[in-house]
Length: 124
Image 1 (cartoon, rainbow, N blue to C red):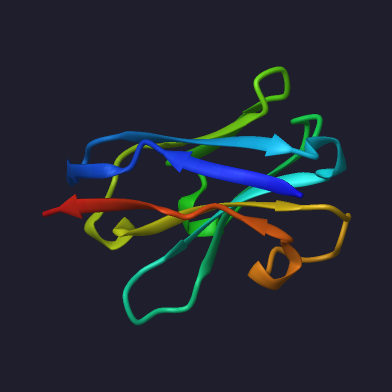
Image 2: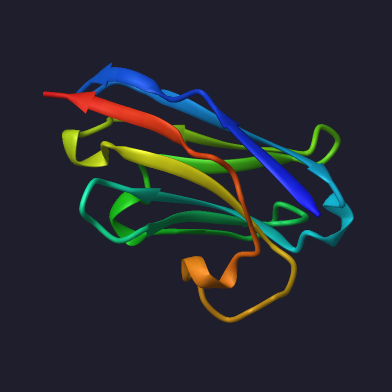
């Protein structure tokens, strides 16, 4: 089992920045990659970013590339999401997720473990 705990969410004005962190524990050796997803009220859970175990491969939702950066620290078993130039449409609950196989997509269903989520609210 893998446990994930997110932190760092909060309220920020448009144009501001937040840094989210996800701490993984348990059988972290089984994790192939870590991802971030978000879900706004009434909307489907949406892929944000993914990072491979060695940190050498990252993938982003196209519309977020350049504003969001995912990074990891294997020694600490943490994955961060740096969010810059935030917009009101970024408002959502952000979830950390882990997958235990390579897979072929970044759908939420491909990920095996999830954190509880952290709220990000961007005011206009």
